Length: 323
Image 1 (cartoon, one colour):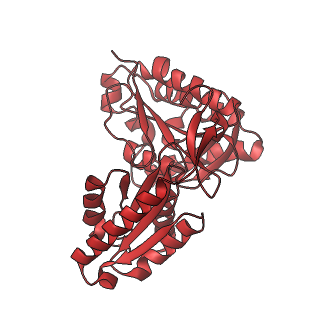
Image 2 (tube, one colour):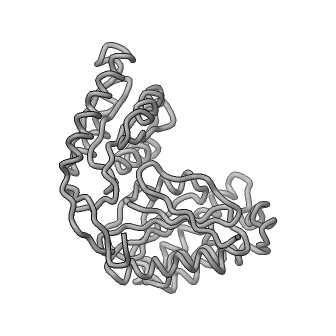
């Protein structure tokens, strides 16, 4: 990859991947070990696992299934094998993946006649899909084809004046060349949300930004937690941060200076190019998962103290201004 662009893998739904992976998606946690074992022995395959037995309901079920399916249809993923205890639990997620034109195989413990046989079938399916992925066309692509996710974690006093502004420069480059940047971690906007709202493309988007932050504050208060008194965290304070506003002003720098085109909920994919806000939790694991599910094919993750988490489908670049 260079400032001019990159060579990427063309997907049926129009996305351009910088990796060419096969996703092993477990829609029930009882088959997570199979997905993870296959991942360790099959280069090019990645485990996309879930928490819970699969019997979530209402909005929880929809968000879990949307997240799994959208991770498996990230531009970096060519195809998927969907695993479950029973076929019926996998069909919805598999259908969402298939709707993007990607090859997908569905199999279960019950349908295979046991765990060992499922593992054998899944391995054979992965081998076939990995071989098929090598035939995916590559072409020259520009920054306009890139979806960049930005994240910060274990922030210290250097983050807001070095690494976050540096990523902001990159974000502006991507947007100016027609690409997409995903800025999230809603609670980290607190105290600076009015600045983001001034950059919204219209009053509707501006109000969505303000509402997203207020909803996070109210949700925390409903559980007896005042975010304004618990942020910055102990590690941030030890790293030199003094106030919530200082942390928030640094955090929003990652998104650069462009116009905010839309605000989306967790694990939804953008409908517009440019700078997009994803209303997602701040912690690294939850947020990088959401960025990958929203289509980020690369993540820039700034840190001060050091933060170890990455993402299975999106290469994660760590940027630090603390020597």
